[in-house]
Image (cartoon, rainbow, N blue to C red; front, side):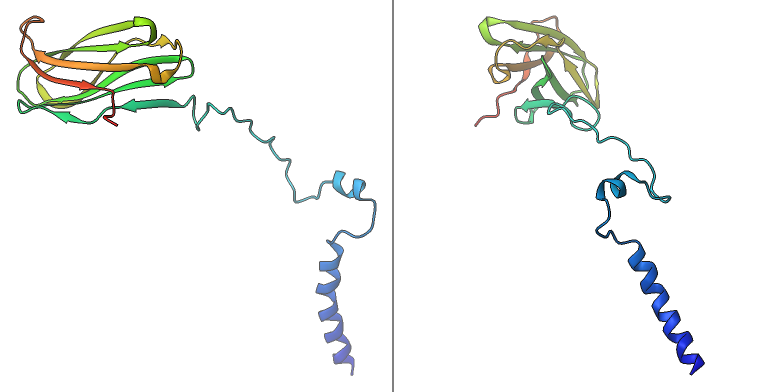
Length: 169
C-alpha cells in the first residue's frame, strides 16, 4: 500500500508543476509586468516604410524585350525608378568581335532627355550602360529609354541594334 501512495505522489507532482505556470484569476497587470526568469527582453518591432524591400529602397524596373541582331549584339533596355530618382540602363552582350559605340537616351515628360554615350568593348562578356540619375518629374510611367548600338566609326557607323524600354504590350 505504501508503494501505491508513492505512485500517486509521482503522478500528482507533474500536474501540480504544470498548473503552477497557468495564469489564474490573480492581478493580470502584475502578471503581465513581471518577467519570467527564462524570458529575454524582446527587441522592438522593426518599422517598415512602404518603399523598403529588405535592404534599401525598392527599385522599379520597366524593361523592354531582350533583343539580338544577326551581327551578334544582344541588349535589353530599362527605365529604373528608385525613390524620387529615375534613370535608364541597358544590359548588353557584344559578340561581334569589334568594339562598338552605344547611345542610351532617357526621355521624360515635357521633352526632357538625358543621353549617354558608352563604349562597348569587343568580347562576349555582359555589360551595362546607364544614364545619370535624375529627379523624377511627373509619373514614372511617362519615361522611356532607347539604346542604339553601332560600329565604332565615329557616330556614323552602321546601326546594328536598337533596344527600347517599351514592353510591346
